[in-house]
Image (cartoon, rainbow, N blue to C red; front, side):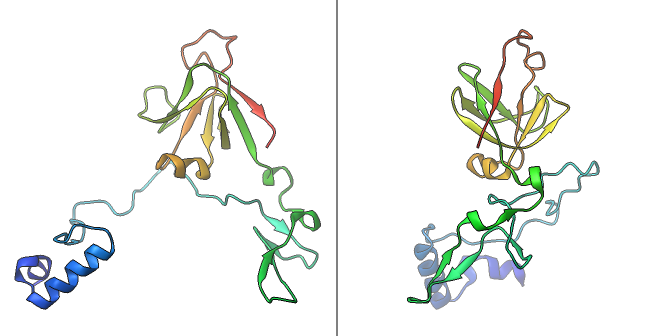
Length: 183
């Protein structure tokens, strides 16, 4: 029965017409038909090493005078009733140094490669040209920088790593690839 429901030819003419209208409103071809994934495709991927990327928030965590924690606080405007973001000057960051953003700037010319894994032989998912900045989530072994989830969105990648050690990249020891900069 499920096979019949997925075949657009077997649908009633009215149902087919409604489906075509929905597809057009969504910007899809008229005759497209969504089907569930096959039984063989993996929905969840087990990472036994526990090294899967954990998405974070693009805003740091703050605490207000009452002890409430949030990434953003909103105050109601007494005249209009609208909610407006409260400035961070009256809030204190939660987590101390962990709440700070870490940025690096590319100094190697022409660019650095962004890899899927912390390995020079891993698949390339992008690159950053000299002078561009990268937001970093963590450093592995002092040689690799793991990109922040906000950077991964731009690349449409699940994980992103940039080599920081010139020797690991096959360059002379004294030639820097990236330098730490203030946010």
